[in-house]
Image (cartoon, one colour):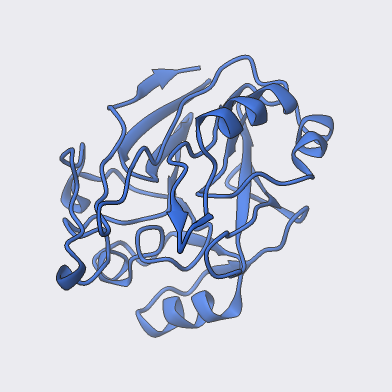
Length: 223
């Protein structure tokens, strides 16, 4: 059994038994962006950093501040194991006190506290930065978490390599300088079909007005 709790934007808790995995930490009102560009949340966070249970594992998909917010990470327990896709992120974490940091690339996997953490392909559409998605497996269940990836060719391979019980692709469809930067609703639905997931939740529901962010509705569901 896995319990999935939506906190806000791309920050969720995946609980496998007693082990808790936090995705893409970002707890500020401005989503990690400077106030001058007027970012804001349309929905309040469901949990604050102070409300968090003990987090065993943190998974980070890429370096954008709404997915990897240093100000939030500074306030978190430094005993968590943190997965990142690039050295730049690992170096930032080391500077703020994290000690157990794992750089991981697509199709690599590690087992931590009985949970298999597998990185899968993802595409960062606005700047071409290193990015991964994750498949988390524990207690006989596997969950796909997409970060804010673009559609990508290897998506069918995820369904071949893993038996996905629940999929969480992004759904915001944001465009950056006229180019698509993330999956939209149709892309997300296509992803769920291609990886053969019987259950899906949407995350990172947002839109840009200048840069303005909103969050999806609260999800707390046992799969």
